[in-house]
Image (cartoon, rainbow, N blue to C red; front, side, top):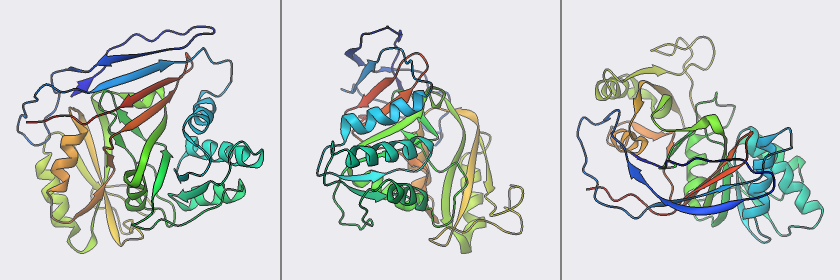
Length: 303
């Protein structure tokens, strides 16, 4: 797993930018029980520290920065789901009303983001496979340090929300930014990864995934109501695509989210999962000590 090691300090009025090489660290968990040898790569992360925030909401500042920095007039913009994305949508609407931005079309990733965009006065269109998206922003539940591979979909899915649609819009975008808080950016991530599976064969698929990550993770089927459990209770969640959702809950640190995604992609019955590995990708991190911006510019070379 690639990681960036840097000391970020807060300054009263200055900002700086630099490029640092990524360094390899020893993996903590090998998801497919095989070691992969990495050849030298040419990945760099750019980090930017902004001046110390005097605003009570670091996340609000990060959302505003994302819109002001990356959204240009005439763009088609993917509108993400979550608290930070909601604030970014509101700010985008204000920029349209004041005339600072013009001719923006929003592509919402969920019913909630569509509702927020409509209230903010942002013209909307629906996503189609051929839709050209210039830029997209979104929340993430966690982002892996160094690689900028993200996890989405941990939160409870609301009516008509779709991880499939959300990921389709993220991958269709020419430029992607995740807006997160500082504690969501780390290496050796733990916690859950949502996995969408075909409902008729859910048990066989769940057992295969459980065997694949035996000793490192547990597999629970997500319920629509009531308490969670391995079988999902009497009312398992069914998505708009007719899928069940498994929560793959890691109890050991994950060495590589990308390797977990590759392993899940080989399982029959898996429709989609919550791992997003998009290149290029930027992460805007809200921090009480100053906003941080990380860029992933190129893909890893794995042999």
